[in-house]
Length: 493
Ligand code: HEM
Image (cartoon, rainbow, N blue to C red; front, side):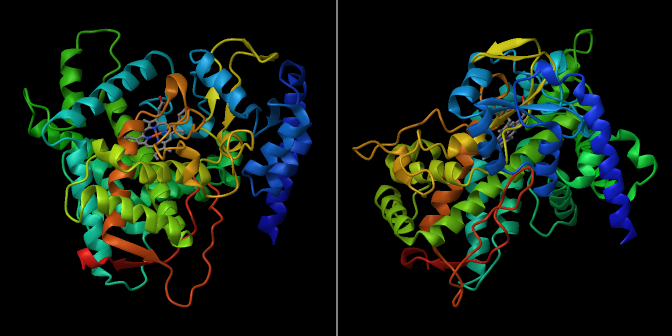
């Protein structure tokens, strides 16, 4: 009871503090609801900005508006035109990442996701080039994904059609792809260290947007007074970073010389090459944070999409059947499926895109920051403003999609049944900071999904009539835990 009273008191003080602090700069930003109203709405939504609230506010204030977040104004870009105008047309100006007190404490402005300026440019470029190189060699990323997809099929097969929760096997397989890429080896699903890493990612992602997260953003010194709410999340960051450092030391003991095997090898060679370059940002701290970035950004997103995919197959058996027929006609029951083969399976490929649109796993796109003053679509936005691209509003815009509220793979097919790529699907972000793992994620989704649907028909457990299709609100939005029965298909039994 007293804890609740203290929390309410802290909250009221914070609101007054924010009101005074922000009143001064109110006029500089695009219009929007008054600060107190924004705060009340955020509190009502459990401290997360619910996508419906943003759409509602856009109806009143237009496609570029301001709401008041933890300790600062957030300018929301709502709808495709505004997001495109900002992220693509003014790509460089919108290329900053706001590093709030909490993320500063976690990532120290190192790596790719939470860095800016010269460090970001150098680390991002290196990440992109290296991922491309690792995708090429004989045992490239695609082979690794095929191997993991096979392991996942075997894991599901071991359940022999009995109900299982698919989330852990999917997360294990997806994160193992990153492990192979970054560390040069995979982990068995019961490896304790591996399970610790997976748990750490889960704890880190779950913390984003909670009350204590927001409290830290407003009072960064809060940990001096109450540290317990932060132990798990800072511990989680430490688990991932310590693991990255340990793997790096192992690589140092067995240097790659001329034939780098994985991301760490490439990075260590780059460090050596640029050791006399005063502008170099290649160092141990940036390496550890890059590893953590790839690991966290690459695990949660892809696995949430796959979990939604299987759930939607159970609730749309007609679509599942159509996909299985297409896969069977294109690849038979044993041919190795590669990403290049997507052209032979346009309906399946369109369905994967529709899963991404319909279950839009990001609450809002990752925030950006303007690096100079800018005018877009008649709105002035000052330098240093936090920008939130409302990807959700684009995914459900009735002007863009024939049946926005209905799961419909035809959104990505032309009248001849051929796949149509739509620039309005902005799930990977856009412009200068577009997702570094976009190509890899697309390969993963295609290969995992086709292999699973070739091997099994996914059904709800007997007696279960309905499954919760609401997302869990967090940094990403996976489904609630559910159980499925993976029934082996005749040619695979
Ligand atoms: C379905 C899977 C994925 C989705 C939906 C996704 C989505 C995103 C989004 C929306 C952003 C922010 C872009 C922006 O600021 O506009 C992002 C950034 C990023 N993603 Fe992904 N991602 C996925 C998979 C991956 C994978 C597999 C990797 C790693 C191999 C990865 C690595 C990164 C990194 C490093 C960034 C930071 C880029 C920067 O700040 O410059 N992502 N991702």
